Amino acid sequence: MERDLTAIEISGTAQLRAWEDDVLPPVESLGQGLWSVPVPMPQSSLRYVLVYLLELDDGVTLIDAGWDTEEAWAALNAGLAKAGYAISDVRSVLVTHIHPDHYGLAGRVREASGAWIALHPADAEILPQRYMQMDDLLTRMREHLLECGVPTDAMDTMRGASMPVRPFVQAVLPDVLLEDGDRPEVPGWDLTAIWTPGHSPGHLCFYDERRRVLMSGDHILPRITPNISFHPQQTSNPLSDFLDALEKVAGLEVDEVLPAHEYRFRNLAQRIVQLRGHHEARLDEIRKALRERPGSTAWEIAIEMTWSRPWSEIQFWMQRAALGETLAHLIVLESRGDVRRTSGVPQLWELTGR
Image (tube, rainbow, N blue to C red; front, side, top):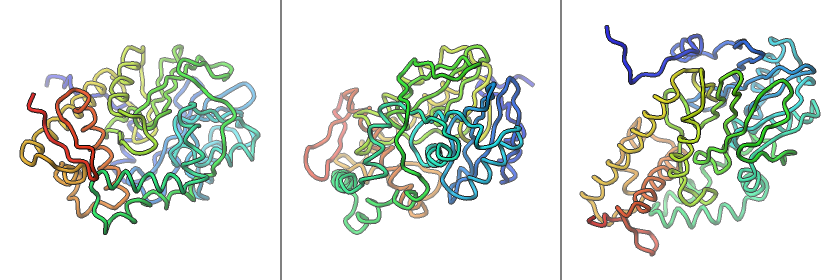
């Protein structure tokens, strides 16, 4: 049988089996002083976030931390113990981005260990409004949803769709800001922070050139595509940012990709080809929708798009994510000159006829 050259190679075979069996994967030593610790996520189809432990001479560094729940805290401590450490041995937490499953426990880890927390400045800038003083963000979100054409009877639920996850984050400010290309102080490791915006404005990947591993956060996952949404806390063209950021990591010498969800894999270049193909197909789908229904709102287009389940079965917070993803694709088409929108409320979209 000929090898499928379009497929990636799954290296996290135990993680894959656990995924297929709908159970938590094991804590694993990956060699070279590196451990993978699954930390469960409440009420999420992703089930867990993979926290990585980097062994130091005097403790460990964490890549991400997990949600702030007792179950997650217990799993993180158990994973540290399996590796031979305690929470007091954590020296630093390098956070890929500020979503709750990555940033939520960072503050609690710092309280228990004295570890320093690192973030990219773009995510650090939006953190207070996202988790501390949220009134202005909720006002901006309502205006944004009105522009997208969200029906008034769904507005209040849609506007506050992400509020239920707020208790899963201990909202603390970082100690260290990592810019693109910075080398965090992690003794014994050859780490470089790579700014990969798209999923969040300040998303970071961490690359160890000597070990030839990329800790990709949510930027590159093996099975699903990360949600790239436009919303009031995003950059002006997040999908374009994401596609550009794929090229930043495409040329790295990487033997294995260590994502934040699902399972480890090899063949980074092929996965990038798949991701690009996925988004081009979505752009084509939107063009088709606008040919059939010119003058549609972003909400109307989102409803007509292909999703993993019927629109009526998608929860409100996931509908908002799908709407944001649809709008991100529309903005890319607008930047290419393929579509245009009106300036009213709601905004209406149509093909330019080019």
